[in-house]
Amino acid sequence: MSDRGYRPPRALSPLREHLRETFWFAPSLTLVCAIVLWFAASALDEQLVGYLQDERAYDEIKDLVAVAEDTKQIVVTVSSAMMTFIGVVFSISLVAVQMASGQLTPRVVRIFVRSRISKLTLSVFLATFVFSLLVLSSYESETDPHLVTSVPFVQSVLTAALVGLSLLLFIAYVSSTLRLMQVGPVVDRITRDSFRVLARMPAGLPQEGPLGAESGQLVHEGRAGVLRDVNVARLVRAARHQGVVLRLIPRLGDFVVPGTPVLAVHGGAAPPRHALRYTVSVGVERTLHQDLAFGLRQLSDIALRALSSAVNDPTTAVQCLDRIVQFLAAVVDLPLGAVHHRDRKGVVRLVQDVPGWADLVDLGFEEVRRCAADSPQVTRRLLAGIDDLLLLAPPGRRQPLVRHRALLTQAVERTVRGAAEREFALLPDRQGIG
Image 1 (cartoon, rainbow, N blue to C red):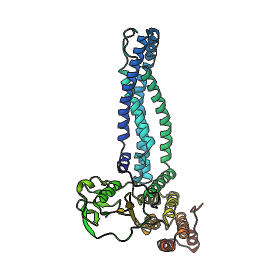
Image 2 (cartoon, rainbow, N blue to C red):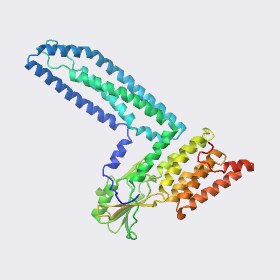
Image 3 (cartoon, helix red, strand yellow):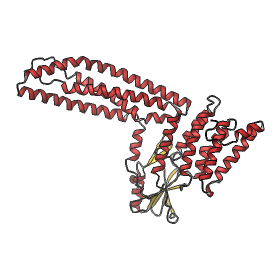
Image 4 (tube, rainbow, N blue to C red):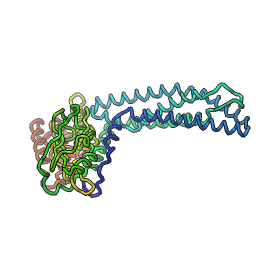
């Protein structure tokens, strides 16, 4: 989180992330590409037949017609079979989403929605289906080489290539989906996404002096919802043109309603409304694009679900604690609390509030600690994680860790009967219980 080497976010970054959260964009774009590809292949077939007719190579035209007739049945079979494949892909996706949502947390459904291999597989299947239908319309009943205007030779070759690609993607899709149905790959994916958010945050050099006096506020005028992300590049540009500093009042992940202030203006008049259009994105749920705390929220949710009496899976909770400790160890000595976005001249133009160290520690440990008192596997791992963080944390950041260690010890002493069992439950162990 250092300003050295910091590159301002690109203006299209929020749009790209929003498109990744949808499941319609990639298939729709692929269908358009399939239609364009068919037009190009059809034009090549016409040019090929025209060239052979100019060269009076009628025997070669007859051979092309024969090959096309032989492949026609294959194309017919492909066009009907691809719909079956598409149904299988949807069935596997729905089962995987249902199992992951029930056993882990509904928040992990976004992983399946954002899965590149799932979108690519569905897109190629749909493209193959549409392309094969278009190829069928290119077949002619005319067999006289003097009258033939087009033979779908190139189109048939491309259909075969699309079928081969579809089969390879189907194998990759099944393998990827089976991995995402396991706890380990899911928590690893959440952790990697959290580190990507951390890597994009420019906080490091503080604001030189306090902000100027607040000169105004801008209220939210859209629909009520969760603050998903902000278009940092557009906000910085608007603040630079106006010569002011903007401060984002709510945190990412906060629920905002119409009429509540979202931006404070410091040092001058507020930028015009049109300059701030599409700078704040509100949706129905949080995303990991810019939300530093959302990864810990998901890991905590999975651990809490695992510790519930309905699931009773402390090993999964330990796996989540491994990743929580990993993330906290990465931010233990980094400046937190505020992000300062600068323009190209290095002047701070946007100040964004982010969770502080104590907030992240509480998010990672508070709820898990409350539910783990009667699970020695989890208490041992939690104590080991806190002790590791105490070794890494500077003196000013040890108090939240010491507090959670003391509260966990008190909870175990109240819950667990027998001195030997309490001693066992309070013995730090990075694996919990082996």
